[in-house]
Length: 387
Image 1 (cartoon, rainbow, N blue to C red):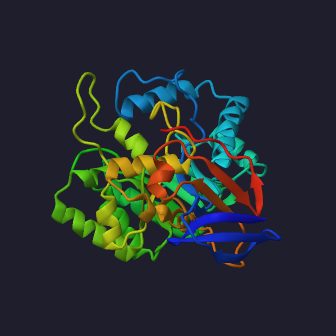
Image 2 (tube, helix red, strand yellow):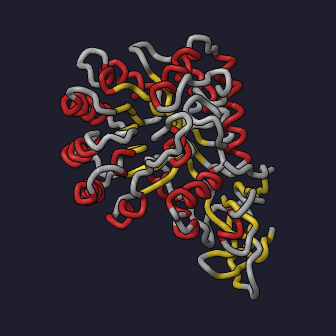
Image 3 (tube, one colour):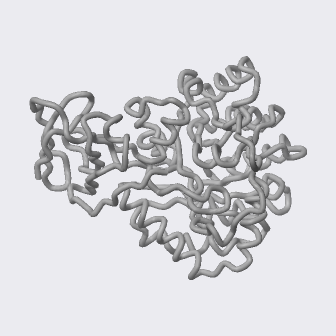
């Protein structure tokens, strides 16, 4: 198989593919017709509550009305309902060219949630690599009696990652310290929803960074949202990001959900958008990635399981040059999930996504026409729909 006129590292090349691998990369003259990148990875999704919209519509804007709508709908969940919704999501992700994803699973009481077991069963036959991360309140996971059984169950049945939600909880330093001890005891990575609001006093991230360094968990802790960094004083933010880089704690920014939930009041145009400082974090040396987060649920009624659309929205919201941020949907999230990053080079597996366009601005200016190759075999690709 030969793929002509591909832009790779700024040069136009042809790719020769044989035996499921890239056999040769040959420079060719003229402009490119395709932009190439490794198959993307989405590090932050919620397959358990996807496609609940509009049956679970919040009564008002904001994070906590969305949580209440989710809780109300959750009472009627069945294995068939979860399989249908999560299966639809994973099929869409595979069609978009996604290689792997991590789904948070709501864990709101000591008992193991239904969705945890159902998604675990689905993982074996999923069209993409699926990791589960429990999403547990820090009050529950940090409880000295209730937290250890949850961590032990996750270690025995999960995908090597423990997760929690932290947002201005009382006594959170002690609770977090217990969570880190549990992760260390069971050899688990950590993935947090942290400071997902616009109050400068939300500073759970600072303690997460300190504990990560103390427990020697470099490269094993991922923090999502961190919206409060967008409203904290710049000198504080610079200090936090420097410490974050030194502790090798990664940052996942979720543009769709953050833009939708933050500063929402009916009849009023939002002023504050809640995006963590991507540019500053990367400049400080933090590993930065982006994820789709919520799709068609109470937290975000739109969206898709297409990393290219996530990149395009992030590029618009944060003024990114997409060509400079491809690693935010490929190698950075792969490392955060403990996966070997994919590369496009001679001898490497021919797992890549080709997007039609002379450059990345051209490729992402409208719905992206693409070709998906897995082990050198071209698979059906969906036409993306703008987020």
